[in-house]
Image (cartoon, rainbow, N blue to C red; front, side, top):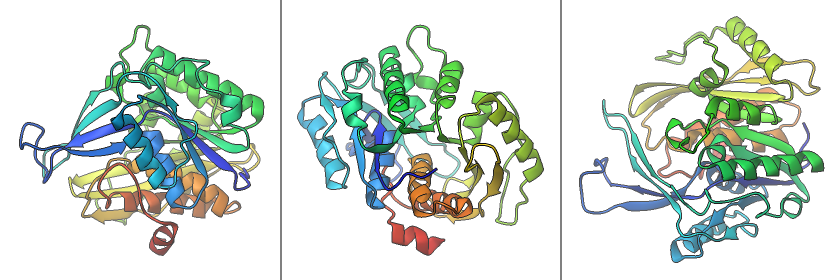
Length: 346
């Protein structure tokens, strides 16, 4: 899977994230801290930070808030020439971080956002994907509205026509599938059937495929993975979705709100016929600052590593995990870990 150092295009909704300081609950305090985020934007920022050429595609309102979001992405090196302006509002979410035994909480406010009203025909996909190596999408864009799903399918049709690889993050968010006729499992499966490389966490894999897997219950780095069972699990999964050549699964055990055990598996093939299952070392992250965007850091790490280590899938996996581990130490949705820092952790 050779990407030849070409552009990567990510497509999704840019969000405004509002949260209180010092681990306060949403019902406490007088001030919100604002940051921009959103899965596909997070991937774009990570890639730009790692030195890749990346363009972000979305629809945003022509308002100071919408323009400020684009300016922030551009400051971080993301190309935004294909952002479409229109609609009335930017999608928003409120984030309450975990603390001690208290779980994190997310409250969405993204109904009728500019991105959710995106329709097929609004974006010139042949121009956008000209010279691109990869189009990255996620299940979130399919979840926010039927028209957004249709726009995603349009992008995939053009990507296939132009020979652009498709990268996909399952990103199942059960609270988002609210439109009439929404069928998350079959829709996410449809997207998976059309991708070349993908990411999901263990819970998302189980939801999508309705198959149980060995649990990841590590409390230290000596935990033994049941690789034979995982190997059979991935072989059955690949029979169902034969197009995908790189399956990256992130696995996390939260010992406490500030201490997570993190690892990953990669089921991969260079020729589409002979597959191998690889495991990464377990990272014991004691001092988690913000786990938001950890999955996006995984996917960006893989997209970068496929170019940086084209003949070394084990290094691709280890690099992806190291990028994700470092994201836990960075506040906000964006992973600002550099290539030098990731290689140093390796």
